[in-house]
Length: 322
Image (cartoon, rainbow, N blue to C red; front, side, top):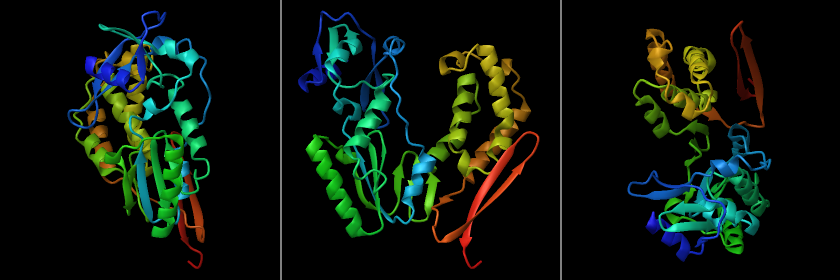
């Protein structure tokens, strides 16, 4: 903790504030990279008194349509993303955090604030407005550039990097990649042929042991829901697990992760039916389909079906002369 705080002070990202009337507890958590950590602050009490700003986050399934006719990609990632966004003076004290060394007040946006995601997304979209959906997709501090040709990608990259230089944005070189035929972005793998889910994430889900608590089951069901467009028959396939989750929510008295953690699945009706369903879901993950880019000169066909309990649809595309 002392090391992280001192780094923030040295970089001008926080300052000692013994007069602050606000403070929240910090926590050091592991990052994905081995041996790497980040400091987070539990600002739930601040969030409870915050009037939330409204900003529409992109719907990944929708914005991926802009990748039609693309063949080459680059990835850019901001260095310590949230810490590059200024926090207004009147808000800084609200996000102060308490350590054994004293109270410190940040000068930049903290991850976990109720408005942090919306503010950062809106700010980045405004900065790169010229390129947004015209060669660039944005998810917070993760940027995906796309083009049909090497020349087009280079021109786009120069423009985007110029914006970064003008705005003083710092990039993380270890997470930036250029001239990719396939790009891993937001848990998807994008290429000339279409969009599919990251095989690494699929393997991680398949390797999960049988759920024991409501939190375990919630994590698995939500992950499958996130991938549902690539899993034919998703709703029918997952119905037994979804039904059991409703029982868990009722037993927990709420639907939050913290509330369902203490519910044991064996106490709310986990049976062999759910074990079989779990295995079927993992098998379906292995057969997740790639979603093709829409081809403007192809004919689209929509097929729908419904029953008393489920409904579904599939969209196909074929050449006009077929």
